[in-house]
Length: 218
Image: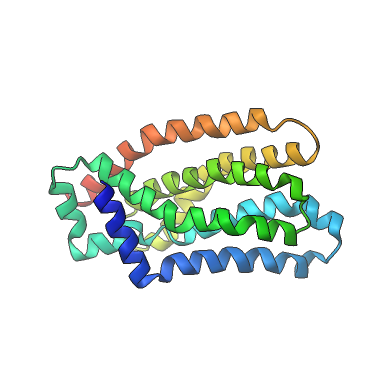
């Protein structure tokens, strides 16, 4: 499984287009908001959690369509499914590689963008914690959608329609946690809910992804 993760990372480093596009989309999306709503610091600080989370959600979705498509088209995915490595672990490896090239860079850049949106410097630790729970969830849920639409016509349209509704709970609890922290309340309940969702997704999503990948080859 580790070799599969390293293989995917090498492919991304060689090509780099999807990961770079997702990161640039995230940065540009956040940077454009002050031009749209004005430079008022209180307004920017108030909308910052929602802006950062929605931009991260859309950036993760942007890179999701190609998660399995390249391996599906060149036959590598079929070989992986026929290998001794269980399909569930293949799914986990692909999701881990996706998070490393999309979720982790977003987490690194997000504090700088949060300061641009006038978020208090004391809330950056909370932002990192929320993103550490939310971004793997986005990768896991998005991977299920990418596997279900693999090989389908107009998968680029179907994928957002399938995945975006499933992203709503992640957005709600992540934004609520950040808002609670910024308001001086405890974000712990919201973080616990996000953690519970992540644990559930870690168990269920690989099973769903593996089943969808097998179905795509039948």
